Image: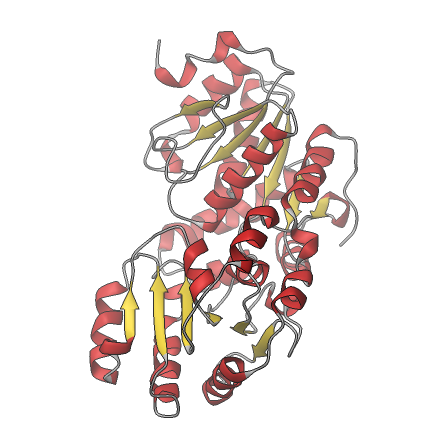
Length: 377
């Protein structure tokens, strides 16, 4: 029996809520998936995890979690196996973490004839994503297909008002299908670590994939200008991606290699502990987890006002500063201000208390179980 089906006969249809995600590698969506699954398990819910590719991955998961993987590299080739899985497992509800996988799941539901509830967690500002997409397949085939099919999910979770507005305006989503639920933060762990933190001054932190969407040349250019004002400033870049060689070369050109550390991908908690300010310069986001994680550690942020999310969590002078897109001189000014501002860590953390994982997980369960309808954003 293929591995992806070996759990089927051990489960009743109504016992598990399935979570469907591309993989459990290094990413914000994967961390949210891990955090939610762990908290729902703690709250006594039965969770199954289905991945397109890969094993359990880099984030912790509950021991009792039912795990299956199609071990399929491309989403476009998984549809036949997904249809067979739906027919065999007959899931009652699936929470899907990727809009392309959601489209495939909608097709699989229609072909299989299995009645199941599909709840999508939207992970990006889709119109921004596809406007910058260079691949013909994604821009001219996948995006039109998403516009045609995606809104047929039963409900969609948006993490920000900006993301919800994008779904309504550009993807035809009825407002009644959209539920605003923020990303979760594990405050109990974070609070204990924040109170023990010891860090040096002028330590800046970036956390994220080293890909064009993160706009890291802007960050490095801003940091090089800051170094002329603050000679002891340092920047740690936490993440991996295709842009790393170009970014390392840019550091040499800007003569900041000795003050920029590329630390690869690691759990960011201890880096939040030791930094002074977290930075975000993305062209767009779905909702930037790094901002609320940094704030939960009592650390301020300086962020570009990209769509979507930063303007919904940043309170100027309380937990950070927000800068208009492309305003590099103002970004440098805010970095310097943030480094010398008299921040109050408890006040910073209190601004993101609504992201506490237990509350967020309950909101997800209410939506998944159908006990709470969607509300207009």
